[in-house]
Length: 169
Image 1: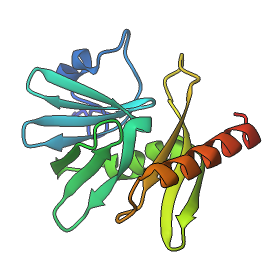
Image 2: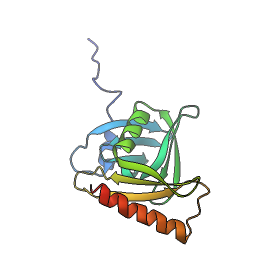
Image 3: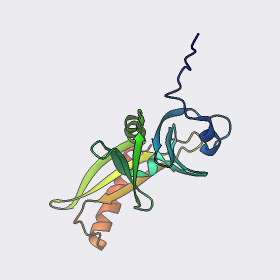
């Protein structure tokens, strides 16, 4: 009688489990194969594993990104550094959908403010999904072409202060 291994396509291969950087066995929401390893979606972070190296990234630190179906590539921009990452996936599984859901889960609030007509700055309140971190991260990101001069910075700071008070998360 042939035995079928249950969940073999959705379970992260055992050799990657120790590289997730967590105690116990963290719950893997999704994972995908890359040319030299895997990317793993956990509740609170993404982990890129290549060889014996693992690089965790909190979902709240992803400014933008998503799936490029034409090139079969995940891409994202890191908010804290501006670093852009592109990772070709050889086997995507459900990783692109989970990536989108996890990044969106960090947003508590987002709005555009206009320091000058036609010039937008996006203000966001995001939460870290790590269980022990209740911090709310407020950020302001100018649209392309917006100069962050003293007047613009003062306007954005006033709007940040107003929104923090109004939405006291």
